[in-house]
Length: 387
Image (cartoon, rainbow, N blue to C red):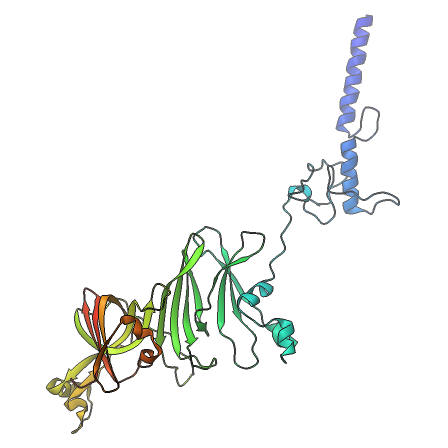
């Protein structure tokens, strides 16, 4: 064998030994590979306590701190994950954000009394602590990501407080309210999320009513545009509570409008669309109106007994449909009400929302004559039953 060949074979043998050492986790000098030392230390930190005087490994190259993402208890010698960045935490996993304290956020937004003040006023700590918000998620802004919606009824010493619904934007570092429903004092209402909208409908406590006993029903809709909500419908109806249950029943709104021409009925509510309270539509409960011989014939058809009184002989009303209808007011619609002397008086449509005229809604007398053209009310006149 020549000297050159012996040198070549010796070099090949040395290369083979070096490759074998790499495959077994050792260096060329027989010591553990530095990377695998780190991997072994990480495995020890997950499976055993460090030796006295040793330093516990941290979330750097070659190991994962205990209890963090990536801590799978792998045996020593396993290749470790790349170094973690400060933005993601250990092993490249995002650090979980703390869940918002929705009570701490939603109670102040709803105007609830703070706990310390509540107790100072004589309330019990247990009553305040037991009150919790209802929390749900729904996509209501049209942005593609769900928002958080809280429903709060503040603790109260006597009757329950109204509901307050709040929509929260949770995309930032701290949740921010997008909508707080404080226009109407709802009790037992239901929130319905929509595509870019929120609707709340149910009984509410009107001005002058006890908080315990709502006598009205409302439906409010907010529409989202550019991340901001605006009130796009505010419909309120005077709806008497059911004597058997004491609850205000849901309002059954019929679809469609009134037929062309003149209809008769009672006003049950108003609907505004711009948040100003000025009515854009009226809510009516219509009935069939008969006079003279037609009244007597209608009474006979319905089996109503009658004598010499005005009812049936002069006038008769038939109400077979308890559903209500919402009919838009035409621009420039004429509205006439009766003054204290029973004489007609013209008023602006906005006056229908005044407390004086709202008090006449849902009254049996007088009734209203409703003239409809092209599906809109062009004339609304308060009148007595007799023509």
